[in-house]
Length: 157
Image 1 (cartoon, one colour):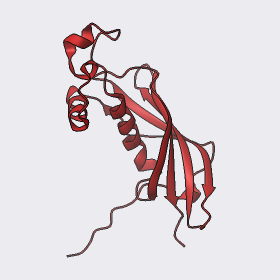
Image 2 (cartoon, one colour):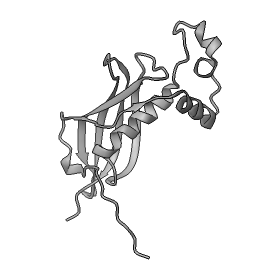
Image 3 (cartoon, rainbow, N blue to C red):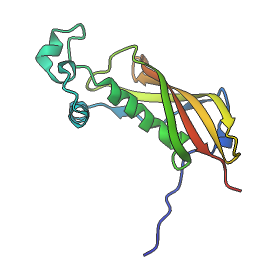
């Protein structure tokens, strides 16, 4: 049986440029089911995410999508153009902010700005930090932002 090698779409360390902004093509509309399943999988039973009557009496007037789902989705949206097949490890997620709520039916898009890069001491890999911003499509409101630091492979010789 032959192994099939899938094409990598991610960038090697050398392909990242400090200051560049990568606009990610993939978008996702968040469904009630997405939010429910994420809360179930993570055992987060916060009524603001799950209970329509409870959420109706909140300042938001409806259920709010779990913020960790928004963060996780954002990482997934960014992978094809950044680290697909070229990552050694995610090193950190820092400075996470949720300036606006996300609701069922919202469509999100992401962009990543390379803020820093440096080679590792072994010269075989590099550390890249990107500022990821997530926007609601339509009103373009910023709903999540964070710094993602990855250990990236260098291009093979």
